[in-house]
Image (tube, rainbow, N blue to C red; front, side, top):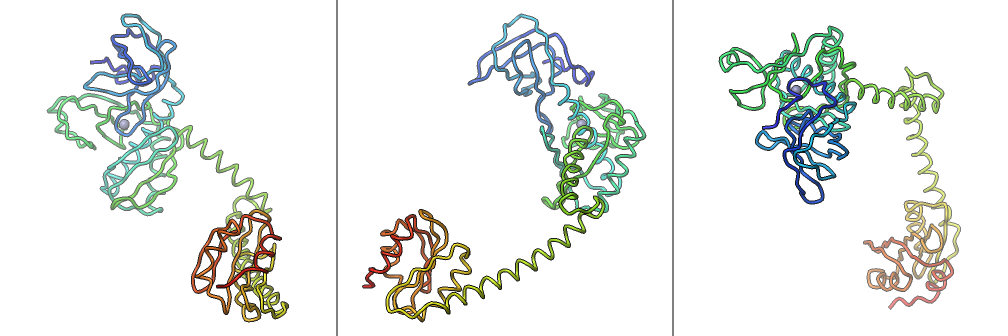
Length: 385
Ligand SMILES: [Zn+2]
């Protein structure tokens, strides 16, 4: 069994350890040392990283009480090495993990719902709650959680005896009765957990519930705490500053300004669409009657406009009417005809003009990867049989 230093002291950043075993495993190496402060991937929390000597620790897993460090180098069995964990990242996890305990404890106490899932990765913390809570209820939970931080209460860990354990009302995902490590956030939570936590809640800093969504009969919530809450605040603050400058609106009312803008934008977009369709119909009225086919190029029209155009103009054209937008090598087209059955010939047209596309009700749309002259010339001579 590896001596787990992180059980005794979550703040150990550096330590000396002797290598008991080291061997290749695919492209990585497995290293077992006599004692470790590296917390393995466990209970939804990702593993610590760092160094054993100059070997980079990429991942850490526990296997029957033995902690396996996955490194990028082979280490010498029997030798002692200086080991160092990436403590900034670990401390962020300690902040988030302890915040998760507090939130889970409060939800359990206030609403009776259990924490049924937890993921603490490098960038994201999610918690699954076995019942539904509203945003208002979560706001209340968040407020109490931050009160726990300002109270700066102790976070204690201990291994109670089997008898003592039976008297405790603690949260647990596993049905263990022996060697249960209890983590107590005084007055807020009691939970069986093996991970490292901060010693006092004041070290957590801000606890923020970010998003939440319905998930398997309950909710999944995203949280940020401590440094991660600070990074999140920075990013959001910088976004609000930019948006506020764009709308020339003070930060507290910028969302109202954005809503008003979006409303008028949608109105303008609808008006523009109707003007563009009217313009397409106008263009259709301007063309002369012809017995042959007709190719028209409109660089400023979109596919809706082109469709309106060919539909309005098709009775004036004996052959095929083709409307194009785009540029040489990449034209988007719509073609139709009031007399010619396109379903019989559109595949050949596509093949002849490096095109692709299809459609129904004698309305074909797609693209031609050729130039305008070739397209015009082709339809002057196309046969409809
Ligand atoms: Zn924990």
